[in-house]
Length: 129
Length: 466
Image 1 (cartoon, one colour):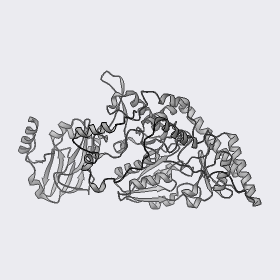
Image 2 (cartoon, rainbow over the protein chains, first blue to last red):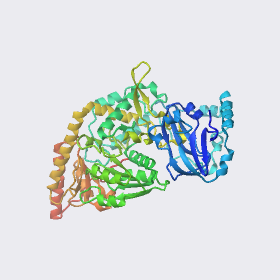
Image 3 (cartoon, rainbow over the protein chains, first blue to last red):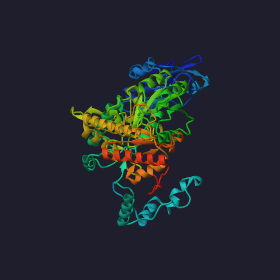
Image 4 (cartoon, one colour):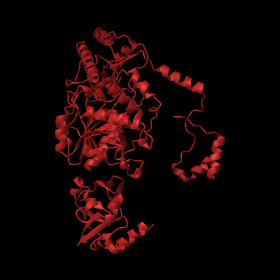
């Protein structure tokens, strides 16, 4: 279910690292919990992001949620498709509905994130409570 | 709303329940340096009879025998008796929206109607359910534009209400926002050349007023084009929204905001006022305040809900975009009732009446020796008069004839010494206007023979607006 090439945060974001670039999104679990997503608010290219701090919001019919960055760096690209098609986050959260691309300033940060296996265990644990 | 006092015994009981021996102990959590020391400067308690007498005395200071030509952001209009009659109904007579808002369908429907009326008047797509007043609405509009453009510079017209400018400056004082001011031309309108050269890539918003503080109507379409070329948003503040019934609404703007006091809210001693803010649908998520939407319930019946409530400040408090609360609902309701009572034709007829009367008065004044109407641009019900001699003396003479003759503009614009801002609404009849013109004539004649009699009477009257 959760792609092995991605790494995960406890706040339900994922990151795909490719050299010193990271692509960031929210997980399938996050989109299911939120329900129908109607609006996404993102930073703009050039903005700084900091590990464990918010960089945007995702609004569903139920709630507005903060999105936290898994890493520190600078935004290099923003997924413009989400402006008109926020529902992509419900249908394809791990690929087409990526949120931002970031130039990593500290690639070591990624090591503290969870693997797909660890994340699956983490949400199973959370759901059993 | 009921006043629920508590006695010393009640307080002792509450402290006991909390496990504290004194109020000071209860507040000990608050750091010492920021605690207020000493006693509040408040008078002691009064009995019901004493309170009534206090207010009666205050009310006596305000006389109804004067004809008022004061405007400058607060407008005297006739209020049909039905406004207060409907407003005072028990179902409506609270300032607050219940937190389980959908329970109060009547209140929500009234707010929805207010939004609809404001959107229609301003030519915008969506309006919120009211803001605090015109000054904070203009400020919220500027802050909204800053969020939308992610820029931190605001350009304001010098003809934006001076108090609106002050409120804006106060709000952004700690945000590092640069505020630039654009002068007005000899015609009393925004200086477009100065605007053009002031716009840059940092500019989030241009805030103008129309009709502006000097009464003249701005060329909003032309200004919008210029502003949009720089990537900034245009905010148009409207302090006298009755003008929107005869002047083209500033539909080219991105945000239209202002003061709705003209619609059924009396000019009282500093308030209350009621702000509005309308915009394009694409900006709605950055709009401050509440928004009521129309929907259907599970049985297909028409109903009303608070829309975008997931973004509301009581849910996401730490992320709130403004400090706007709910307590303007009653004034917004007054405006809704007023506008519905007058209707489209009625409002237009009233606006035309204001327009005609103001132009009659200006025409008569312009014919008085030594008097002139300095700004040539079109105006609605408010205009500037250059007085024949000292404005303060003339105001005292008008006051002696039971006329509050206008606002001396020197108070806000040092360069406009001996210029009065005069507002003529339907509350002033033609006989009064002719009496005013006669005072100007007599004053002008006295000046000529150089025998101005020392004027009797109390201090000149200015306009007080909280």
